[in-house]
Image (cartoon, rainbow, N blue to C red; front, top):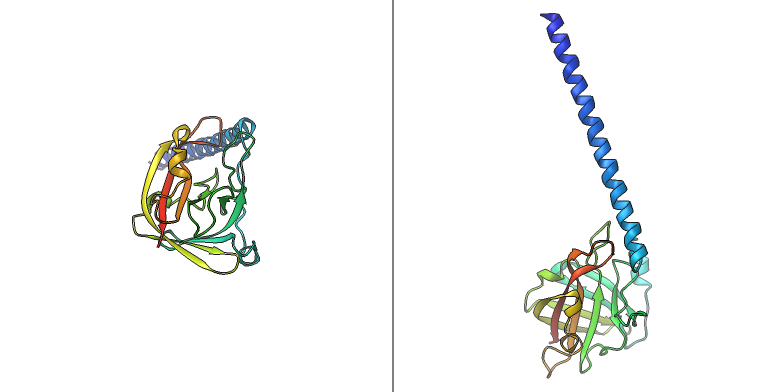
Length: 213
């Protein structure tokens, strides 16, 4: 009887070791596949954004001209981020921030509180972490978005609606114009949907339309 128990114990131990080795092998294969996907994506498009989280000093010491957007706050989804100035890429697309925790104001769009629409973009995520605009898809009409200028003045906008587009079918007319022609607008844009194989890009775009209070 003791010999049978010992044999059974050895069999169970061997199975446990085998399962452990299989688990380690799968984890290593997944890690290798993920690294390979990242390298392929970087080779086929813009490099992945930095995931280094800004410190409190980085945030507090960020400065811009008095009338420029400095910070964005979205209390309902815990967004508190700097707003960097962005232009166009070589492909005539709105450039995106180099860090997943930053937002970018397209400098050819409206100034804060002025007629027209401000356009602010931000990353939804990277390979490693959620981006600053990960949760804007959950914003509801009436929720607040606050832009703070370089002089400390805060301008409050309220969400009107959200819309999801195919990445190559975003309405430029809607994106660059206020949702209410009678009030200054603020339009946020980020990625959505699924990652396009072999790239760092997504197949959808989410746009949140807001108007000044």
